[in-house]
Amino acid sequence: MLNSFKVRVYHSDTDCYNVVWHGAYIKWLERARVDFIEALGLDLASLEKDNILFPVVDLNVRYKYSAKLNDILTINTTLNSFSKIGIEFSHTILNQEEKVVLNAITKVVVIKDGKLLKKIPDNIKDAFLKEKILQKI
Image 1 (cartoon, rainbow, N blue to C red):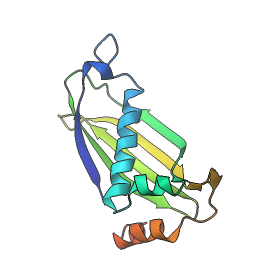
Image 2 (cartoon, rainbow, N blue to C red):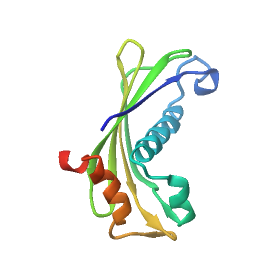
Image 3 (cartoon, helix red, strand yellow):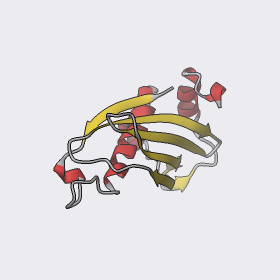
């Protein structure tokens, strides 16, 4: 499954040279993960009420090309891996000329009541299985 959305670069996303500030990409990667998980039918707000969270434990970003003010960026996210305790996402951000701006890998774990779960709950695993995502890995 590919989750994809577009964003326009605003002044608040840039530094004094009108180049996207490196940290601005992180908020788009977060949105990408949330959108991906919710597209599977999981409601993160409901999970949070049950004290289930998906904290990021590893983030590897490779900046390839500078995005600039008013660029339209496409953020693409796919699933890399799904294990007993973690989920790994792959992200690519492209500019309007289809040039790769950034590649990133994000790893999250599942915690409940502040404790790492040694096994991802079945309802979460089933959402990934339902979309046949796990069969491709």
